[in-house]
Length: 325
Image (tube, rainbow, N blue to C red):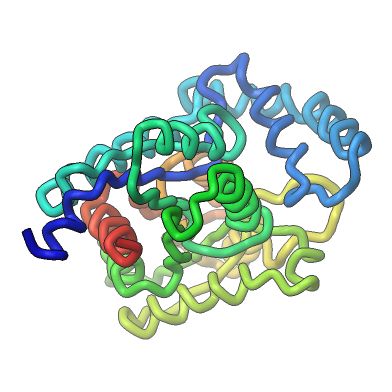
């Protein structure tokens, strides 16, 4: 057996990591508390952070519960993540027959620590953590990295635990996003003027001022998309603002209102950074933003698809995993 063949016989645990979401309406409070009690999101000492998190949850739960009720009463994020895992395992199984897929979530179970512990108990020779975020922010990947490094120390994993890199500029990510953008543009009348609005999740402006690279990475994605698929009348905006603090601008809602006032009649909204459908796409874009666009006089509103189980995304994740092996 060659060295390469021996490597392919290793027991490999691949853990897909996402934020999670409420699996039912009665899970919303616990999910939201875990989210806002994360020090990477609210940087304040305990017990004040937990107290503020409880207040936010109490205030926001009724509205959030209503929003989830409009999209089926649960988040589909876990279902899509498991589907992605099934497809990745099928893609890599021929080359790595002892590869197994696991899942971890930042704010529901199984946690990162629990998933790593299971991989160790199962005798994995290598553990590949795959955060499903194209962009780095302290509030997302920063939080995940903290959990992974804690598990590395606890189980003395050293180089046995490897982490895939952010993929905001990966050619397969750019090409896959362009495919979805072309599909969305195909739904408007291209003989008439249309505009394209890229929308990504916002962060508090204070994060960016402290050096968080999130905005620059999102802007790099847009630049690479337009470099490979030149498109006129494009804009970038940021969505999902909550609370009274200053958030990244321009906001997606305000941008759509402005475009409507300027007479735009056809608008393609292209989500960036959301690798599967969940509340930010199914409610915020498909219901809330679509309604705002209609009120603003935009006659044709098209929301571009996110990856979900798109083959380009599965190929991308497979390539990222192989980089770590």
